[in-house]
Length: 143
Length: 194
Image (cartoon, each protein chain N blue to C red):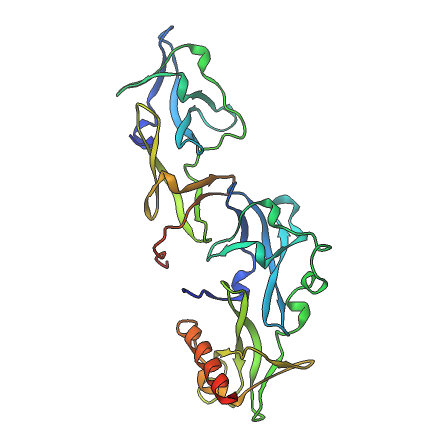
C-alpha cells in the first residue's frame, strides 16, 4: 500500500469507537525499514500513533486499540515525504513523493522520487535537509 | 573511471550534506587550491541559516565522500576540521592565492588569456585546467571562454602562468571531451621529454 492511498483515512478507537483523526503522513524507522508511526494532523498540532499500537489497517479506517495511543508527535520525528532526495554522490533525485509499505507488517518496500521507485534498502538517512539514497552500482544517468 | 570535471565556481555555494543524518552542515564558500601542487586541498565554508556567514571550520578534501551537481557529500558532521588542524596554506581561499585574473603565457611567448576559473577533476582532487577569457590573438575565439589543459607541473610567477606552446591545439570550448584533451596533452609532453 502507498501512503497516498492511506492519506485522509480516518483513525478510529476500537474501545470507544471515537474518531481520533485522519492519517496525514507517516514517519519511518530506517534501522528496520518499517513505518514507525502514522501521523494525524500537521505542524505543531501533529499527533501520531505508533505502528505497533495499530489494531488493523482496513479499507475505510485505521483501527487503534485505545484512544490514548494517539500521542503528541516528538519534534524530531520527521516524515520523508516532500523532502529532497539526494544520492550519496551528491546529485538530487527530486522530492520524495510517496512511500510504499506492507499494510500488515509496516515493512517499507520502496519510496517514490521524481526519477522513479527507489528500493527501501537504498535509504541511508532521513534528515532535516534531505533523504540520502545509496548510489546504485551502475552509473547514474546524468541529468 | 568516470572522471568528473567541474568548474571551481560551480563548487561554490553547494550544501555540505552528511550521509549518516541527511543534514546540511554548511555551504561551500570557496575552493582551497594549491597552485604549485595543482591540487584541491578542500573547501572554506559558510554557515547556513540564520547564522549565515563565514565558518571557522574548513572541509579537507580527504573528508569529501563525493561532489555532485547538487551537494558535497561527507560521511558525518565530524568531517569538518578547525583551521588550526589544517596546514597553513589550507586555511586560505583560492581567491587569496591570486590565480584568477593571472595571464597565461606560452613558452613561445604568446599570451593566451586571463584565468577566469579552474577546472577540477574531483575524484583525484586535481586541477587539470584553467578556463580563460581568451585574448584577441586567438583567432575566432576572442571573448569566448577557453578551456586550457594544464601540464602536471607548471611554472608560476607573481601573475604569469607559463605553459608549453604545444598546449594550443588542446584548447577546448566545453567540458565534454576536455578530460581526454588533458590526457592527450600530458601524454604528448611526456613523450617529448623522453
